[in-house]
Image (cartoon, one colour):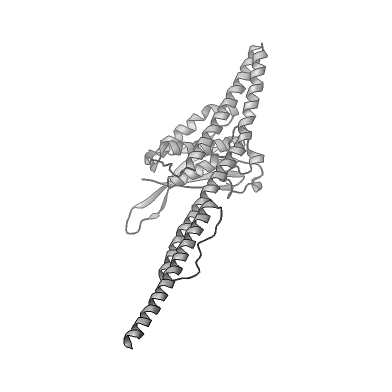
Length: 311
């Protein structure tokens, strides 16, 4: 009698176990089908199951964590691709304009006999070519910055000397525009941790922004400040500030929280000498080099402030 009862109990257990295994097998097959569906279709759905056996439920949760990460990365990649595509589209007009202008001035130059007018047309052509070069360089840098593999090698950099060199490189342009810049850069050699070429690009973009969008004046200052003391140390932290400012019309129309966005006020402010990417690139480069950058308006002056910790 006992053996019959044990046999019956074992049979029931076997049947239950077989049913459970079949259910788990069916759920795993369903999960595989759902994963195939996710792979083949653009959807944000997660994996679902009809039952939550302890290990099957944990397995589902882990799979869904991977799925959520996959959704997130796919969305970020799509957003990045759309951003680059929009950038190419928006810049097509900026590139087309000087190209069309170049063609026209080349035709005028070809037919012109007067040497003064020829020199005038050549000067305009050179200016348009320089504008095209600037736009393409900005586009190239913007594309590189959106590449996850792009890396800036940091080294000890004399920020005061580099800023002086960059400011001096604009001497001819300021002279041509009748601008006498106010330059106040301390004589002390100040070193920060940065990428020299990237920092030079930052200075160029910020100064160029003042030249393109400002009025006929510009101020460039570099000075150091104490930012406080390290905990447990008597040594004060030194910070170097670089401020580039210029007078502007209608300061109430400028949103300083948006000036570092791509193509901010594009229709009103962009011209053949501006890609609309300059400040956006400057911000990303500064932050990649552990610096800070912000914009503000003081007494009808648009100011870009850049700061780095001194080493």
